[in-house]
Length: 286
Image 1 (cartoon, helix red, strand yellow):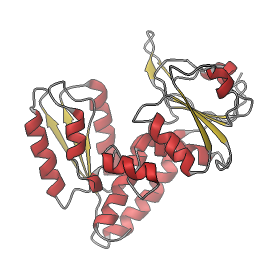
Image 2 (cartoon, one colour):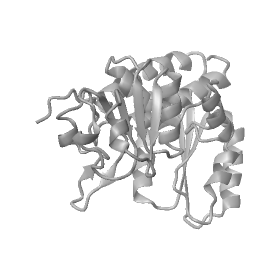
Image 3 (cartoon, one colour):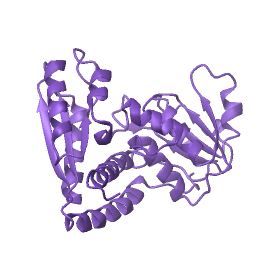
């Protein structure tokens, strides 16, 4: 039986989008319309859904948007050519190349080709480096969304012990940097960590991003801790499950995110926020 406060990503996301919409309307009066280009190579079904959702978010917020759909056999050269063209386009402030890419294309080469000022995914080495040293940069969307959700609980991050399970470049590493930026003391756990439960049970804030369904149960959690579940896994039954066993975990945790409806809705919202920020910078308005 769940007594924990459920953190609704949809609710937080809707509030942020409402603020973004107001800002977009006032920027439009100054001749600044944020523009996002999304590039999709091939027919990956999950990617198709993401791209549709991104295009809809742009429309809802009053952004200009372009979707470039390329064949699965597109060459790396042709994709690089498109990225360079978008880098030059003044009506495009954000460029997002949907990952994963087909195997003939090296992801790194494409990420590196995107202008750092238009890298709204926050994956370019320049933006990653700025994140690490604490300089201004476009932040990776999912980790930035995680921080927004924690702040929304009203719990102070500063001085807390945060434990992150998972060390991926997309979530684990950047979220640990952002938690440090908020003055948390951060411990990172991963597949080689000894005594993981001893560490996670000390966490005031636990962020789980391991890609294993229902990996974390109540035995990992300090009573009352904030639990953010970044995982999204499809079970054999077809249902979606997070990396946290929600039923078990929510019997001991404090505020906790569900899956679906937790971190998921935040990712696209933070992407929109980055695109707006990039547009303001391009127009000298930030």
